Image 1: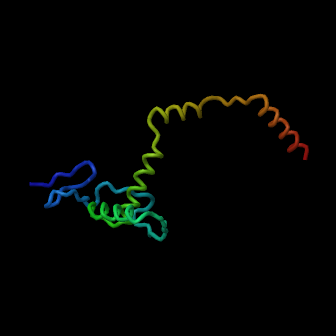
Image 2: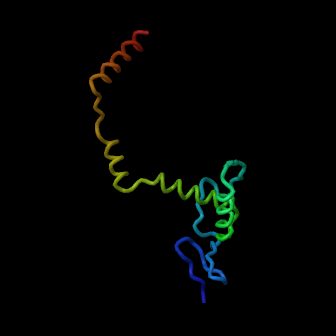
Image 3: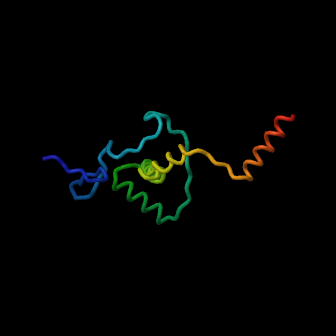
Length: 117
């Protein structure tokens, strides 16, 4: 009988607690084997630190891995465009550019100043 894996990539342990399955739901950026030399320092309350440590332990990962993994997941959520947003963006890029009168006057003044020098 094989263990079931939930949406978060976790499988229940003997006590029914969810544990992260190694290799599941990993977020990677750049080279997989790139050296990890950079650091981020965070100040937080003792209770927030304790909560993060407990949750990382429940997931079976280090605090560093837990924080990195969830920060990168959140980053991807923020940076992802919906299909309609992406379509609107590319349509805006493909439309001809129209300058208003003030911008057109500034561009002409710039051309005079740059060419005359």
